[in-house]
Length: 166
Image 1 (tube, rainbow, N blue to C red):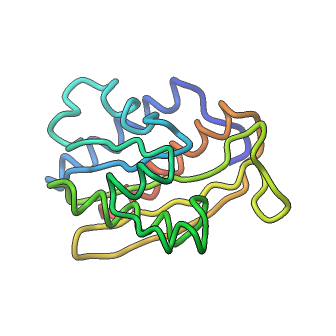
Image 2: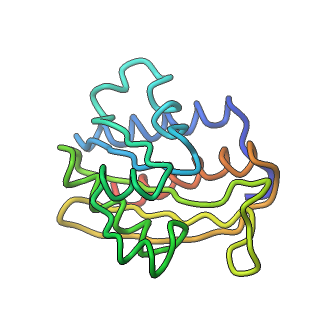
């Protein structure tokens, strides 16, 4: 994605995802860190989203990831919150803690601080999982400021959900 999607773009993508899932009778759970609930918020901005969105978890701290989603402490200590193993574990935990068919997770560094040489600002790990089905993990180093990184992350999450909902 070259330019960060704006609010109108996110609402359009949310509406498209909801219809895609609705046609397939699939429900969604979100597990969000750096987006702070923006995926779930974008979905609930669309009337009728309650037939698709089961629930959303905002697990910003490591303790929240562990306590709410069951992300193992050894995993968090070995790989860190911003990692593929953590994104996968967040998806698994979200599915365990919900009745949803599909899960998406986002964990990253939206900045402006917090980046390192190994994990720069803009690094975001994504997980997407279908209950008893396929799993996807991706990571991107996204350009832009905090808002742009978060908005682009939401658009990527919607794309991943559509992929596993097919």
